Image (cartoon, rainbow, N blue to C red):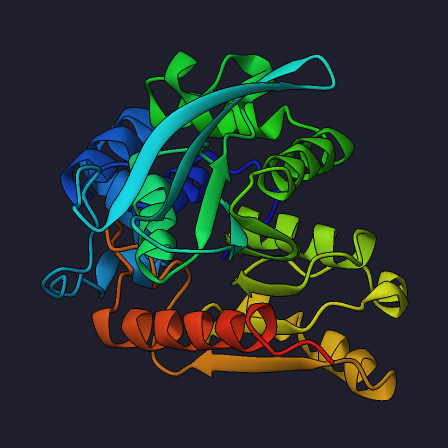
Amino acid sequence: MYNENEKDPVNELVHLYVDGAFDRRELIARVTKLFGSGAAATAALGSYSEVMAQTPSACPANIKVPLDAPDIVARDIEYTANGVKMFAHFAYPKNVDGKMPGVIVIHENRGLVEHIKDVCRRMARAGFAAIAPDLLSRQGGVQAFPEPTQQTQAYGRTLVNERRDDLISALDYLKFTPFVTHDRIGVIGFCAGGGNTWDLVVNLPEIAAAVPFYGPPPAIETLVNVQTPTLMIYAERDRALTARMAPVLTELLARQKVFGMKIYEGVGHAFHNDTGANYNAEAACDAWSETVAYLNKWLRAPRA
């Protein structure tokens, strides 16, 4: 479903709905405002299975990790890198002796919203030092854009090289955190964040493991640069995006890269986001389990 170049306002509103920015009633109200009538709005939304057919699954108990969870330390942070004031969420397990691996958590195309902060804390509960940088920091951070459409518009103004630089600054933050193993840092990202995960994979060989969730793939010619073990998480009903992975698989196989892939049957784009309409508890829990296992495998492996 996600297309970085897509400017259709209905598609953008549906995408925000799927990502949990607002509920179905608000979506219909906004589309009605666009078209001037409820009938026209219903017709415009009729082709979107995300709206007409799916409802959120129940959230399993204890999947969320509150800010004051007793087993972790979590807080919003600010730091300056390359003259840019960066905003981020930082979390790590409490009372752990010695060093631990780190993980960069990359948000969707709305900035560092509360859901991604929660995912960052889930990483901490899984035993990693996790940082979730706000790629809207150059524009004042997500807090400067209280309305979801403003957030996506702000993300649309970001540039690939600036996002990469800001993610590298998050990597450096982890590398210079005393209790983080500097060369055992992985990255996960969702939707647009999955695309940014791919960008790091093809440009930054020091990333020790990566898990892009339904992210737009990189250009085929860049895959020659891949040195990072990568687990790709995609959705069967996210057909346009998932289909774009076929040549990626062919190229990775041909070049004997280290990778895995899971395509979850019967679910759509953003199925992991428990605040959105496409959330599927069973698939999300399995994908999270696979993600943590993959990161443990590559970030905690004994050194040769």
